[in-house]
Image 1 (tube, rainbow, N blue to C red):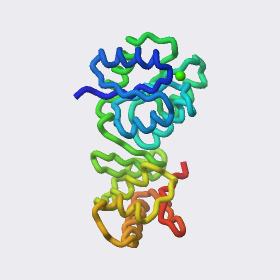
Image 2 (cartoon, helix red, strand yellow; image 1 turned 30 degrees about the vertical axis):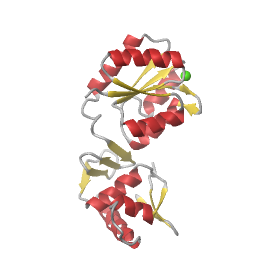
Image 3 (cartoon, rainbow, N blue to C red; image 1 turned 120 degrees about the vertical axis):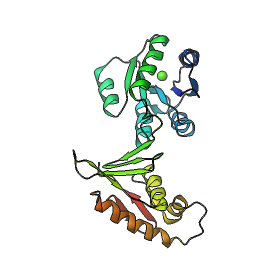
Image 4 (tube, helix red, strand yellow; image 1 turned 135 degrees about the vertical axis):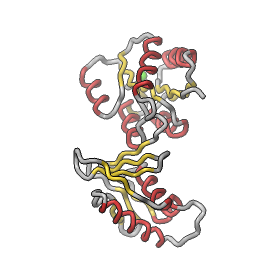
Length: 231
Ligand code: CA
């Protein structure tokens, strides 16, 4: 199966040119032209890499990159019309893997895609969520916690329900979740009572604290819980 590349570019001619070259190089192409489309296409198509134009309608490429990085570590190559250091530095700092300045040759773009995929090989299929000191590898169902900067990661042993809840919350840090929603994440077919969630959350918080990740989950009065990252 060929790797899927998400091309986010609002200028149709450039998007079509890029798509033609990337497809010719043997990749599958998904396209988006706005910030909203890009975020949706990323979560629906789970691409191996994203080519991301910075100047977009409805925001900019940095918004898309930030939204992607909240969820996973898909490699991203930024495309910018401005060859200025600030753009380069800020996009690399928030987690872009490379950048290309317009005008570019499409064959150079394909080379960069191959280079980034080679460099990140293995990590593309390992979907990872990072929230503060917490790291969750979705496919491996592995949860690790880094107690302090530079410390080694400590693995947590979670039940399937606890893992489901934590992974669900980690996709949207800071968002407040209702008990009903967390129950659905814990066991989609269960008809258990909402208060079961409190028991799961209580154990989850104990396990996180024991691994050094204290105060990661906080109750939201009258609703449920949120995963809170101080970072
Ligand atoms: Ca543009």
